[in-house]
Image (cartoon, rainbow, N blue to C red; front, side, top):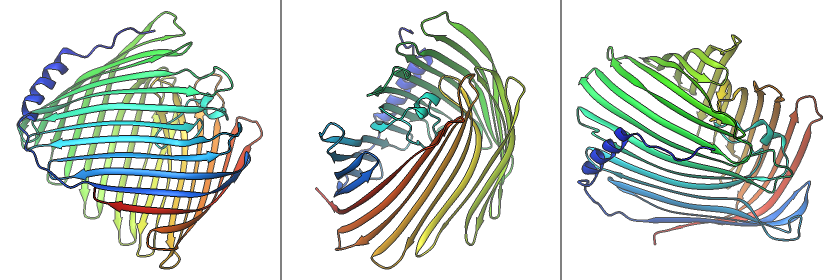
Length: 442
């Protein structure tokens, strides 16, 4: 396993410069608002019928110069398989922001416990995690970012982050806990109103327990933002990346090479056109992607699309596609999208992911609201020996307002998953209960 985690010396110098600016920020007091939601009901699924309570609480304050938010939410079910109380999806989150004329500081912390295999937006779980149907994933994150020189010719930002993922109540030892530490530094130089130059450096160190993989990624390079005209902009980044990796405590292998990212954007009367060309370094070599897209602001909503190609280090080419539509009306809203992309995990493993998502909400009357959503994902793992995984989640709910702060809620959800050529597994869940929402100023 890896030993210490090192922060570049340049990053420490940048942080010192930024803290000097941060100490001069103005202070302003603001009011605090609080809200809470409580619920009690009955839930029924393949594990049986049981009572469920829900509780969420948030406390926050936002002013011109600072803001913070504290949130806690969890469910409580009884009885579980052992005739005991069980916490369901407990979550804790905290964020703080402090901004001044020329600097800004942000910090956050979060904890989330979920059943493994739960679909998480913008994340590709390990194939083994998706195939398991027993156990929990505990995800803890801490981070901070300091931005300095926002209005000056010289500026930048420095960030630190730590993430720990550990698994509990597994039926086997196929999943390994890991800790990922990340630090990054960007220095920005404004040459003239049309041209910004930057220097970037980053260290991402992931350390796994047991037979897992340790991986350290160190990219550094330079970039530029160019305003060609009032409606045309371009961005270019050139980096050199070094990757050190060892599996199961074995010897360390090193891979390195250049990467790049080019983006050209043009503002149009009713949207934006975009072209992207980029490369990244993965376990299979250098992956190159090219993509073109367009966004449209229409009278009946917003529509965007992009299409392209992705070529892996082994020479295989996959098509890329993204289509999205959203609309908000007086009585409801609709969001729908499809995305086909090649995702790379923090361990360098590549996956071709097809995603479909639909969300619809409609007010049936002044006191009754209907909501439904669908999410489908197909994970095609490139790692040898990993089978494809398909997951479908469908849910719908009906909410009726009983009083000004009490609602009755009825919901139904269906989950279906299939691994490789195995038979599909499915589960249905029904919930009926009441919820009460409160808000006040402490």
